Image (cartoon, rainbow, N blue to C red; front, side, top):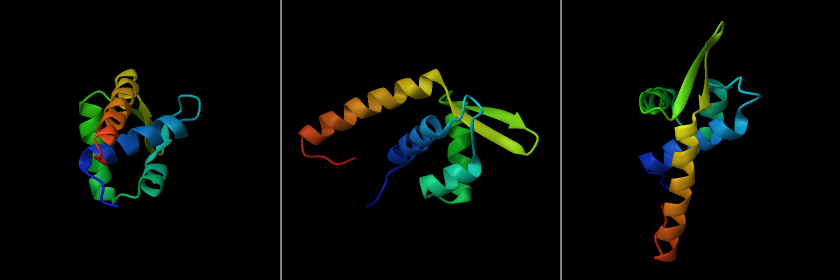
Length: 93
Protein backbone atom coordinates (compact mmCIF):
# COMPACT_ATOMS: atom_id res chain seq x y z
CA UNK A 1 0.00 0.00 0.00
CA UNK A 2 1.25 3.46 -0.90
CA UNK A 3 1.84 5.87 2.01
CA UNK A 4 1.81 9.60 1.49
CA UNK A 5 4.16 11.88 3.44
CA UNK A 6 1.49 12.76 6.01
CA UNK A 7 0.85 9.08 6.71
CA UNK A 8 4.58 8.38 7.04
CA UNK A 9 4.95 11.29 9.49
CA UNK A 10 2.03 9.95 11.54
CA UNK A 11 3.59 6.47 11.51
CA UNK A 12 6.93 7.83 12.77
CA UNK A 13 5.17 9.80 15.51
CA UNK A 14 3.22 6.70 16.54
CA UNK A 15 6.38 4.58 16.65
CA UNK A 16 8.14 7.29 18.65
CA UNK A 17 5.24 7.44 21.11
CA UNK A 18 4.87 3.67 21.46
CA UNK A 19 8.58 2.76 21.58
CA UNK A 20 9.73 5.41 24.06
CA UNK A 21 11.13 3.86 27.23
CA UNK A 22 10.58 6.12 30.24
CA UNK A 23 11.32 9.33 28.30
CA UNK A 24 14.67 7.96 27.17
CA UNK A 25 13.50 8.35 23.62
CA UNK A 26 13.82 5.96 20.72
CA UNK A 27 16.83 5.45 18.50
CA UNK A 28 17.01 5.89 14.77
CA UNK A 29 17.48 2.14 14.17
CA UNK A 30 14.07 1.38 15.68
CA UNK A 31 12.47 4.13 13.59
CA UNK A 32 14.09 2.80 10.42
CA UNK A 33 13.04 -0.79 11.07
CA UNK A 34 9.51 -0.20 12.31
CA UNK A 35 8.83 2.74 9.98
CA UNK A 36 9.98 0.90 6.86
CA UNK A 37 11.62 4.02 5.50
CA UNK A 38 15.05 4.81 4.06
CA UNK A 39 17.70 6.52 6.17
CA UNK A 40 17.76 9.56 3.89
CA UNK A 41 13.98 10.00 4.02
CA UNK A 42 13.86 9.45 7.77
CA UNK A 43 16.64 11.98 8.40
CA UNK A 44 14.77 14.59 6.39
CA UNK A 45 11.48 13.79 8.12
CA UNK A 46 13.01 13.89 11.62
CA UNK A 47 14.44 17.32 10.84
CA UNK A 48 11.01 18.54 9.74
CA UNK A 49 9.22 17.00 12.75
CA UNK A 50 11.79 18.45 15.14
CA UNK A 51 11.59 21.91 13.54
CA UNK A 52 7.79 21.70 13.70
CA UNK A 53 7.89 20.88 17.40
CA UNK A 54 6.29 17.45 17.03
CA UNK A 55 9.37 15.48 18.10
CA UNK A 56 12.11 16.34 20.58
CA UNK A 57 15.69 15.36 19.85
CA UNK A 58 17.75 14.10 22.79
CA UNK A 59 21.52 14.07 22.47
CA UNK A 60 23.21 11.04 24.04
CA UNK A 61 26.75 9.67 23.91
CA UNK A 62 26.04 7.26 21.06
CA UNK A 63 23.98 9.55 18.82
CA UNK A 64 20.53 11.07 19.08
CA UNK A 65 17.28 9.70 20.40
CA UNK A 66 13.81 11.01 19.74
CA UNK A 67 10.64 11.38 21.77
CA UNK A 68 7.24 12.69 20.87
CA UNK A 69 6.28 16.12 22.21
CA UNK A 70 2.90 17.17 23.56
CA UNK A 71 2.26 18.86 20.19
CA UNK A 72 3.09 15.57 18.48
CA UNK A 73 0.56 13.74 20.66
CA UNK A 74 -2.06 16.36 19.84
CA UNK A 75 -1.26 16.03 16.12
CA UNK A 76 -1.80 12.25 16.31
CA UNK A 77 -5.16 12.70 18.01
CA UNK A 78 -6.35 15.15 15.37
CA UNK A 79 -4.94 13.01 12.55
CA UNK A 80 -6.85 10.01 13.91
CA UNK A 81 -10.10 12.03 13.94
CA UNK A 82 -9.47 13.19 10.38
CA UNK A 83 -8.71 9.65 9.25
CA UNK A 84 -11.99 8.41 10.73
CA UNK A 85 -13.89 11.23 9.01
CA UNK A 86 -12.24 10.47 5.68
CA UNK A 87 -13.18 6.79 6.00
CA UNK A 88 -16.84 7.72 6.48
CA UNK A 89 -16.64 9.22 2.98
CA UNK A 90 -14.91 6.13 1.60
CA UNK A 91 -11.45 7.66 1.45
CA UNK A 92 -8.35 5.79 2.57
CA UNK A 93 -5.46 7.92 3.79
